[in-house]
Image (cartoon, rainbow, N blue to C red; front, side, top):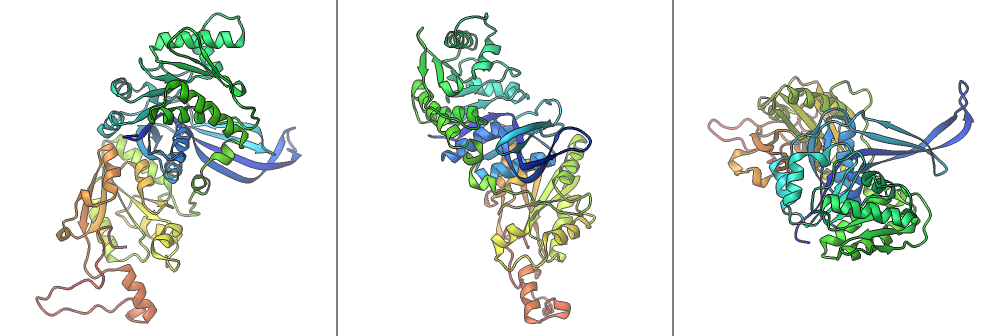
Length: 498
C-alpha cells in the first residue's frame, strides 16, 4: 500500500444495551429490561473503518458528523480505533441505533436522529486524500454522504480501486468502480428485475444488470451463510461458498466490504479479494460477531460524564455553542490543557484566545488523561472542579472533557477555525511544530501560539505547596532587580502552561 485506505459514507452511533428480563411492566404486557451493561461503537461506515484499521491498515474516514454529544462520542471511539476522522459538517442530530438485548437476543431496536440531512462540502484535504488513497471503500447507509457531488467527482477521478457497498435509498455507484458489494436483498431492490427463477439465477441477473448500469468492473452479491456470487468479465458467474457459520450477523457486510477493499489495496485480483472476504466474514460470524471483533480500545473507551456541571460543560454544551456560532458565520476558537491548578498564566492564555474569535471552547484533559500524562499523583484538582472553574470564566463559552492523551479526537469533532496554544514567540514555534496542526489542516483550520506569563507553572506551584513554601500553599515570588529579566522557574513547553 502506498497511501491510506479511505472509507467514505454515513456513520451512526450504535449502542448495544445488555440486561435481564425477570418481570412484565405493570401498566402494559411488555418485558422490563434491567440494564447491566452497554457498549458503544461506530456504526455504518465507521464500523467498516474500524475493521480495516484493526487489520493493520492506515485508515481515514470521510463522514458527516453533527455538533452534538453523539458526534463527539463517535469521534472518541474512532480515535481509540486508530482511525483518522475527516468530518464533513452535518446539520441536525447524529443518527443512533440502540439495541436492547437479553441473553444475546435483540428485544427491540430504538432508532433516533431523525431524517437524513445534507452533508457539508469536503475540504481540499479530503479531496487530496482521495487522490492519494491506496483503495477507497464507499459504505453507503442512505443518509447522503455517498451522494455529495464534490466527493463523487473525486471518486470518479481517483486511480485507486473503489469498492462500493450500496444502499437501496442511496445513489447509484460512481461509474467505473472496481467492485460493488450489495447483499441479496439490496441487489434485488436496486436491479428491479422480473420475479421468478432460482436464488442463484436471481442473484446473477441482478448482478449483471447492476454491473452494466453502473459500468462496474464487477458486482458481488453476498448470500449470507451460502457465500457470494461474483459477476465480472465473461458470462459465467463465480460462486464462492462459505464455511458453515452460525452467530450474530450484525456487521458482517461491513467486514466483507472492508476485507475486499484491503485485498484490492494489496494488489489482489477481484476474485481473490472476494474469496478472502467470504472467508473473513464467515469467521467473523462464527467467532461471535461484533461483540468479540470490536477492538479492545474501542470497547474500553467509556464516555466521560460530569454530573451537575452546568449548561456550559460537556459535549452537548460545546456542540450547541459551536453550531450557533457557525450558523451566524462566526469564528470558532478552541484551546486545551490540564488546567490542574488554575493560575494567572492560564487566564491570560484563555483571554487572549477568546479575543481571536466569537466563542472559545476549552478541551480539558480528564482525570484519566492527566494521570497518564503526568503520573498517578495528578491531577490535584478533579475534573469536575476543574471544568466548573473554567466554565465560570467570562472568556470561556464551553468546556469539553476528553479522555484520550491528546485532544485530536475532540478537535476532529469540534473542527475549530483556530486552535490556540500557550507558548513563547521567541522559541520560533509555528504550525509545523504543533502536533495539532495536521489535524486542523483536515478542514482548513489554523493553529496559533499566544504568549504565556513568565513564572507561572502548575508543577512548581504543586512542588512549593508540598514543600511548605509560599503563603497559602503558593510559591513565594522573588522580585528581580531593576532592569533584570525574570526567568520562569520552569519554562512551559510549546504545549502551553498547564
